[in-house]
Length: 324
Length: 289
Image (cartoon, rainbow over all chains, first blue to last red; front, side, top):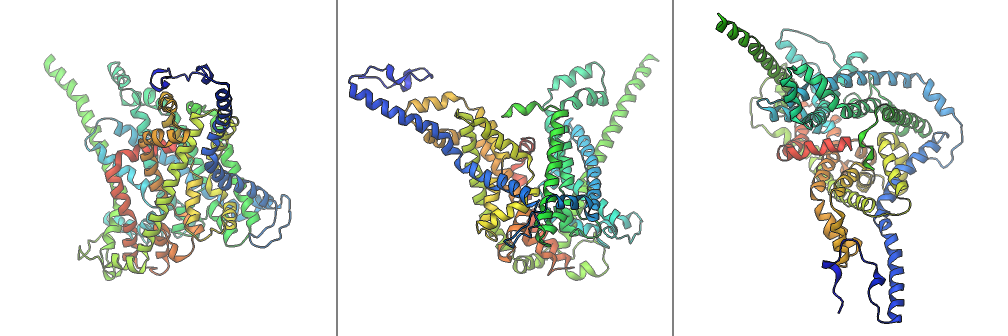
């Protein structure tokens, strides 16, 4: 009676034919079974991957492929006929005045994300030291990131409206103003970019805080013994420790400021010069039925974002690349 | 003489520390006010009557009746918030279940098996993380439309399930920490690959599942773009799109709009208060995949 090898054998599975075989017939059956088993085993990973891969290809790669194809046609998104127009759509992307304006708008958001990263970095540094009510402050600073974008849009529409929150606060300080905050392009874009700082600082802050807290505490103690002040500690211990997260945040900031959509769309609908690249693309695609042009816009945006990501990977080699 | 000198010498830096600590708290309190005041004002507005909102009063005035919930009633009944809640719950249930199953299966297949094209499959998932989904919706829309899923709740469910690569990474990172000897012991007991996944690996993934459920839940709940594009029908509103539709009929009725916004924010606040720690870790992991 052969013992079951489940408990006694070492983790390395013993070859099956090493077991004493009584009959030829049995060996043949075993060989057949093992061949079937081997094909089954070869198939197993694919059985697990079938659905995920199908979804990945259907909803990411097929759209990217189609988008490239549409971008060379004059398709309107509905009619069965589409004509090949070569690079005409791309020429339009770079010459249409409204699209150039839209690129300028993303500069507001880019500037805002610089402010956002600076604020987040400050609070992450401050709250990494022991402070009273630390968790309360951490929670308050992070919470906006979790709030629904539409709700944020309305909260700030009320904030900026005539006689709204901002005007009332200013009048407390004796500053009477009837400035329409969302009334002219510069002021509207600054206001909207400010909302985006309000919303996203929390995420940067928590990322930085996590990175700072993973720096071993002995380093600070040693630095303190050597007489290093807070600024020196920041400069020589914290800054190098958070470099990977910082470079990640910069990438997220750049690609984020190019693909701003929710806040301006909800708050102003892209009026008074606050339209962004994505709002414009959505308008071409779903309001003006210019699928070809919209696809070209999307391809350009995708190319820019891929380029930025690639540049970042080249400039700041990521230690976490070994993830895969 | 020397004593007083050392005392003042000691007091100098200490006072400077005290001043800088006070300044730090001041800045922290200011930042908290900047965060909380816009939200608080909207909460106050949601309790006011329409005369209190319009009639030349300051936005910072307190409501006359703290128990005036009539705006919430209007938001619920005329704003279709109940339908929206149902739709969001339906979408959340299916997309989260799907994401957990898909993410854990993919991670299991990639980490535990050696097969041809493994590198290619991984590259396929990796490159997909670089494609921002906002850019591809123009063409994704046509794909969804060709399946006849436009204006159904399955469109967002499939999109949330199929395009979430972050959760695959979270599972992948976690599954690496589970020793292979666990699988092998089970295999020698005669367990098939599927049994190992279902009975051994999946239960051990619980912490990763919690992370994915929280991140996925919050991002799905907050998403506006996808339900807005794919479910234009009014009866298919989610929390985001139903609230967005307040803009038309309730035009300048800030008390009703505020009540709607608060209704959307409260569930998030409750989840945040109870699951704080998981949320910080989850989003930190999710963002830096």
